[in-house]
Amino acid sequence: MAKIVRYGIVGFGKQGSFYSMIFQKLGFLIKGAKLTAVCDVNESRRNRAKEKLKGVEIFSDYKEMFNSGLIDAVLIETPHYEHSTIAIDAFKAGINVLCDKPAGVYTSQVVKMNEESDKHPDLLFGMMFNQRTNPLYIRAKEIIESGKLGELKRIVWIITNWYRPKAYYDQGGWRGTWKGEGGGVLINQCPHQLDLFTWLAGLPVEVEAIVSTKGREIDVENDVTAMCTFENGATGVFITSTHDAPGTNRLEITGDGGKIVIEGGKLVFTENQIFEPEFNATNKVFMGKPKTKVYKYRGIGHYLRMFKNPPQHIGIIKNYTDYLLGKTDKFIAPGKEGLIGLTFSNAIHLAGWTGKKVSIPLDEALFESELKKKIKEEEENPVKK
Image (cartoon, rainbow, N blue to C red):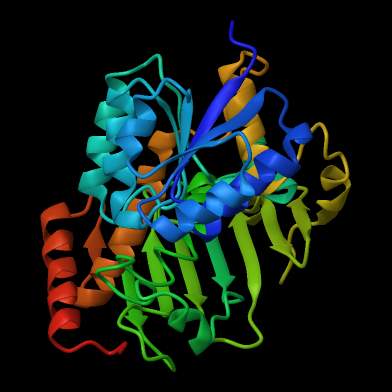
């Protein structure tokens, strides 16, 4: 068994340089992981990497890095459209893949990525879903899987604390464009929440949405209200924006057994002592309602145990490394699950663009056709100058 996992990073922009810092300055939290190579097509970024990263080989071509024999796993930190292509090439080169969110821009390219992963069962495929290390969401998942929440009735997430001013979109030419990003708040800021939404409640079967751009000179959406229906008839609402100030981050999940609310760094589970359908069938009291018991959880206590359970991105890299080295049998964020949240994201976009209810599985060809229309409109008459 190998004692160390040698990592390479493709893309040394803001996120790639952030991960390099994790390896070089916080590596003591990820035993068995070492950064050995970095790749970027931009010469100035390569020069910056050479200055900052001692003992790390720098490449201009990621395929050369894959074939160098210097890495065992790759972190993909490039523009969204390139994720699946680079991952597929990595699998073909015998390299393990840890891809940042989103898995891709449209589902058909991610299906191909997953299919290539299936051809290499000896290679580990992971997604950087760092919010899955958050103890509050982990606790919510445990409550749901224990059966205490009962059958899902409703899930509502208001996540509008992504405030992004004009200066943010001016920072990079690709930001706020269909051709550069493939979308706005749904594809850039919200993949983690879309992942958690479906991780906790499952993938909806129908979606309706209002998708718009407000208060910013950008081509992509920055305001979304999506409504969805699940197979059992439960409903969901997902509201997000990057222009609300102040914003909100509140997740509420209701079932027959009670309600989970996550907000302000704590989880509150209000548990019905009798499941609502049973109470309704047996209650004789006018305006009666189930008795409840309240449980409160805070995430900070878990975060303090940094060495055992480091949070966020460090936690995902640690779990990925430990799994490769056989130190754990629990894999937090399998790469193939990136398709689930992206499917929900594509369905929201398509429903908003067409003004029609979208069924899941969605029409992939129709989505790609509508996306191409958005790109063409942007090229002919861009809002962002």
